[in-house]
Length: 125
Image 1 (cartoon, rainbow, N blue to C red):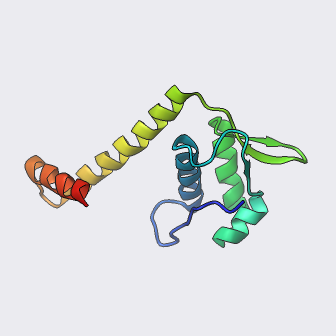
Image 2 (tube, rainbow, N blue to C red):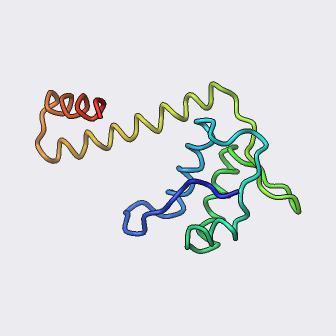
Image 3 (cartoon, rainbow, N blue to C red):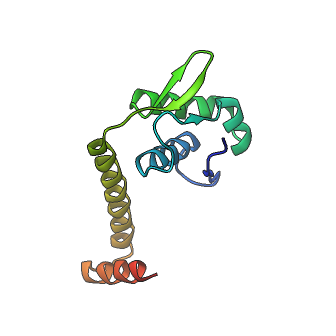
């Protein structure tokens, strides 16, 4: 299975974290379901043109957080996550993104009202 994720090499966010966050988003949004097999570490690293070590770190982090399970000889699968946890993870991801956007806006001397206006414009797109 090929996952609809991509990495931005020029980003200040480490590649393993980009992979981790995108897979987590696919899981909590329901785009990949419980028990669904994920690509092997080698296959995913090849698809994303990154190192096996980078992909392994993303998978290890996701497994520690309970999003995926690896079974020796069988592969890696989406773990069962309760709806409350999914909802919390989605809200946290969006909240953190808004928080970072506000930080950027304040660095550019936008007022709270100007930031609200920009958010409203973005919501209209």
